[in-house]
Length: 309
Image (tube, rainbow, N blue to C red; front, side, top):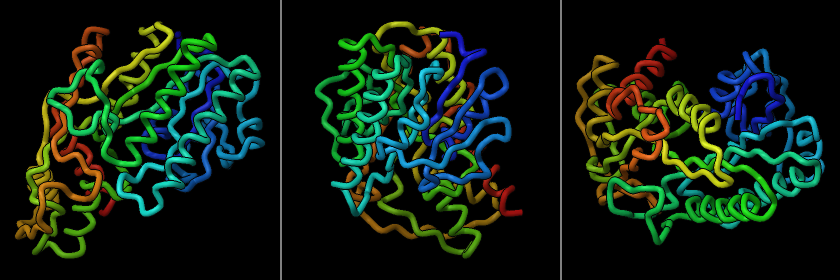
């Protein structure tokens, strides 16, 4: 699908990935951002994009933004905390949003949908994990909700003549204080540069793809993959440990803290401690991550440190 001269809806477009996607698409397309601002910020929405504050679990809200003139929907809106204290609500909200969008799209004749899923659908899988790995056994409600949403998307791709692009994300850092490990370390060391508390044992090791590279990869896949149901991992061929992230953040901040560990081999319930996705399918389509996992972590850490100054 050529992404130029189109009317595009970006749900969750005030969040980290969604706002970068809207920013990438806005120069060449008419972009509408729909977000309830529960996970994002109004000032992250590009100036050249239209914004609607809307609850996408409300059918009336979905009808307001999904109209017959929309050419494609980039569905990034989600309740995303892996260790949420309201798991039933998270599962219901995520699936209600996705099902509601699909029903409304089908009703008005909009049939192109790009969706942000997650590496958490794989559970604790062998590494590197390819897109055709099975069985998919998530260990968090968040992962279960994403897998359920993928099932809905597959159904609409195969029985409702939709074209769907599903992206299973590695960790996506960027210039946002959003509660993930890099901004957590930046904030902790800004408050106390002498000691850093690390969740787990510090040996958790995952792949990190910077948000700017992430949205570039999404655009590339949407423009070059044309099956009814397209599933792609987005990540890097390398990984970074939590200890290494701490070292990078400390280096960028010019401090030398002592590390204290909370213990255990994972940071929280539902955390997959080791993750690396295969990106061979993405490479075969002509897109390679320009930065290593360490490089993505350092770029995000530098951006966050600069925001503190």
